[in-house]
Length: 161
Image 1 (cartoon, helix red, strand yellow):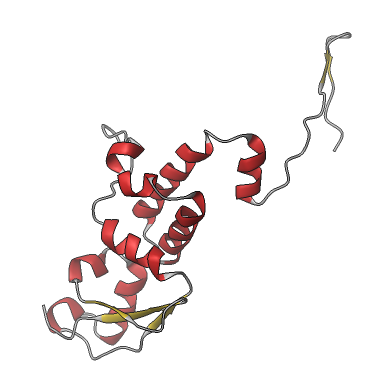
Image 2: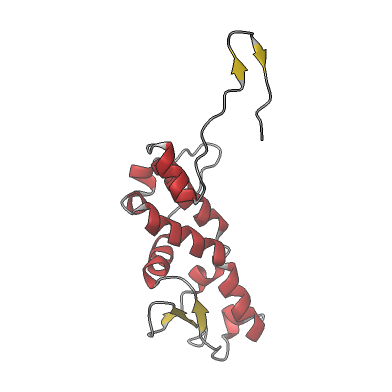
């Protein structure tokens, strides 16, 4: 690995850039990998000339979490059913708002597997909440359920939309 294989990121709440030099980590983040490939398609072995800093419109804490856990968070698949408290312990300790920022950053970085892991944690947290809080988190208005079944006549009527 060349010392020139690095990329600098500036998060929205920090003026100090974060420098990534870990080739394996960069390869797991498609957006950053493409940014380096622009300078040199063989960046992994030959390095690249310094590229301009990339502005990341997310908090640095979300980026730190992503960089720290990207390799260890494996999504659900055949034979592996994750448990938040065991497999995603650090994410399980975060608030829904913190997780929302992390999943949005993962989407921005196109780190789909990591995004799915964080979405799993969010889903587990949401299933414990009342509907009003889930609707508020999702940014939607909770509508009152309409009566679609008239028990007296045993007919099913379509909802009036």
